[in-house]
Amino acid sequence: MRLLSKLLPVCGAFVPGAVFANPACPICTIAIGAGVGVAESLGVPTSVVGLWAGALLTLLGYWAIKFFDKRGWNFPGRNALLIGLSVAMIGFAYVGDIDYTPVWICDVLYIDPILFGAIIGMILFILVEKLYEWMKRKNGGHAHFPFERVVLPVVVLALASWLFSVCF
Image (cartoon, rainbow, N blue to C red):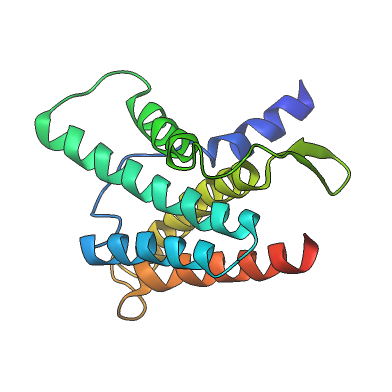
């Protein structure tokens, strides 16, 4: 019971929350999508492509949440469902292009590198969005610098990409 009370708040950090503002501009969303396609064609490791694709699909999930908010379509578990469905689209995006080839990751997890990267990308993007909102609240409702909302996820994903490149 004691362990559960400590793990519950940690697990809650991974649940997507309500969207208070646009998560990113449409131009940035398109740029990320194009970057994923270019990276894949340049031979970037599949786990890194999955990382960025997972973040992109999470971003599209946030856009879907905004769309549902505008229409007044609310139901229990809506945000988590929309984010989950968005990230699950990674399977449809690469059907026929990439074979499912699971590998051992750190000798602990046997999973496909693209799927693993997509899950980590989703988690990182959600956590960075929550971090940004917290930082903005602490700063009186203002960003610390222009385009902070864009810079934070890009820096975190770039660091994770570097880590993936070194570790895999």
